[in-house]
Image (tube, rainbow, N blue to C red; front, side, top):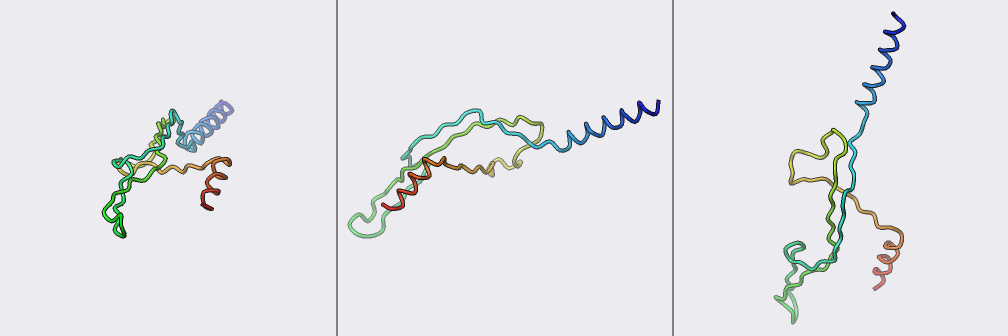
Length: 105
């Protein structure tokens, strides 16, 4: 009987360690990227000097949209929805080489 209790105890400890050590897991469900020139998304710059003084310029930028699903039972982020979750987007080598070429312009 003591043998069985020992094995049951070991199984319980392993189960508890597995549950406690699991990390939150996120899954990318959908992604979309657009080249946009939209004042409501990007804002604008008003020129303050020279002959174009007062002209408003809206920049062109990449606009990313992601749908991410939490596949674990742990909460991700904070309760303050305005803070959101920080993501880091790393371009692949081809895009990095193109961006390096833009520095020389």
